Image (cartoon, rainbow, N blue to C red):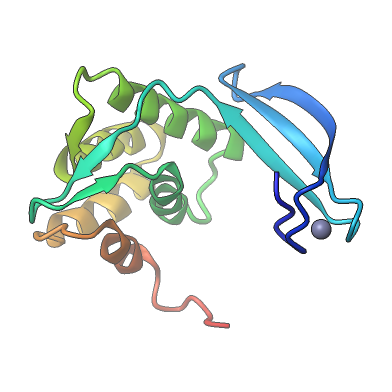
Amino acid sequence: MRCPFCGNVDTQVKDSRPAEDHVAIRRRRFCPACSGRFTTYERVQLRDLVVIKTNGKRENFDRDKLERSIRIALQKRPVEPERMDQMISGIVRRLESMGDTDISSKLIGEIVMEALARIDTVAYVRFASVYKNFQAADDFEDFVAELRPPSTPEG
Ligand SMILES: [Zn+2]
């Protein structure tokens, strides 16, 4: 695993343990070149999912993008990070078990709303209001940008 700080590929695993109710393995890693420390998660990937956007374009499913949008919706809400991770894993498992590797962006949005509604009403309303205004929903990046509060300081 390449060090995210210095690019050295020869990093060491210092500690491995189960996370997210045993659906993931959390590994703490150390880079001897720059003494950087970072964490990786290992998960089962049942199959490669493809997102079909409303404009018909295909894009590989990206768990990180999904996580980002959910994280923004849950910003400053009293939800444990562990619970959020479990929710995201649950969404991904559900997507993976749908019997089709092609999944519409619309369906993903609906599943996320459903999951958020169960965990935090405010986060659900945040997500849903942006999602419903976002008729085109062509690009998940645009959607995530839309969700971001305008007060976010830029570097
Ligand atoms: Zn390094």
